[in-house]
Image (cartoon, rainbow, N blue to C red; front, side, top):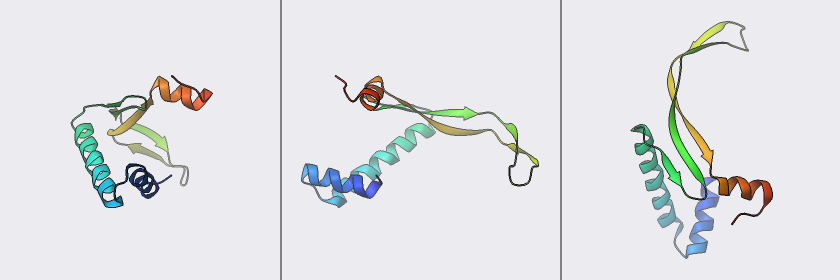
Length: 95
């Protein structure tokens, strides 16, 4: 499911226009990006949490050339599903 499909479903469910839902989702993602960039985590009940984590510099082999390359230190996003979401996915039932 992509962003367009999600926007259409939410718009239909809430009797809103696609534009209204798209503007809301764009703002939400902009806000999340800002918070993650500051190092703050985002927790969404019944869904999970997003957090910025730092990856250390490391060396690995380029599978195309066989040469060793250095991947510089960088940040990435880690997602941890909530227990509710995990139960829902694994067992189909969650309270």
